[in-house]
Length: 66
Image (cartoon, rainbow, N blue to C red; front, side, top):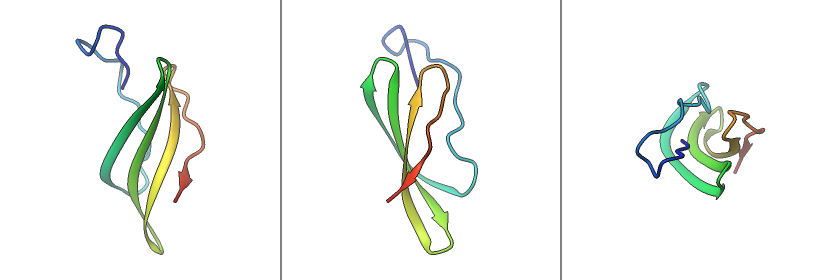
């Protein structure tokens, strides 16, 4: 998700969710070290749009469902 050379190479992939993701992934840069990732996930009530903050170091915040 992160690159130090304008997209020529990227850091290792980071698993955001392996529960019930169905796709529709989005990424927004907060700054050079942090992004917000969104995706749709299946839950008992149907589906949820989820968001989580991810740091370049691999630290993943707590996800929230909308």
